[in-house]
Image (cartoon, rainbow, N blue to C red; front, side):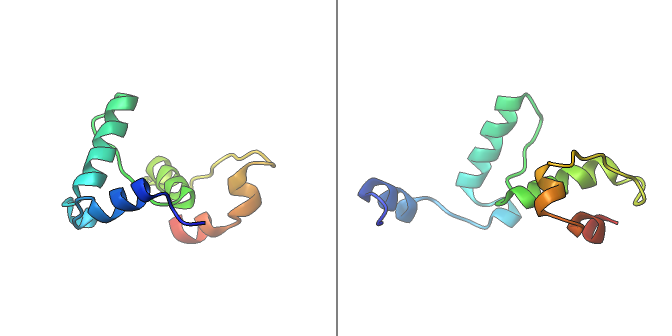
Length: 90
């Protein structure tokens, strides 16, 4: 199905920039909104849940690459993302 006209118009007319360099006003606004919503100083937009999980794991285990995380046997990370974190984060 085609996107509604309003959605297409919003996407094609949105102010854009290089989000890696902090120059995308839409991403900057989203990050500021999320930081305010959760009462944090800053927020980081990542486009996938896998990237978000990796950031979270690495932020908690960055001092010791041999650190362990405890996961439930039915957790998404355990079931669908396998050993990828161990390969990427140590």
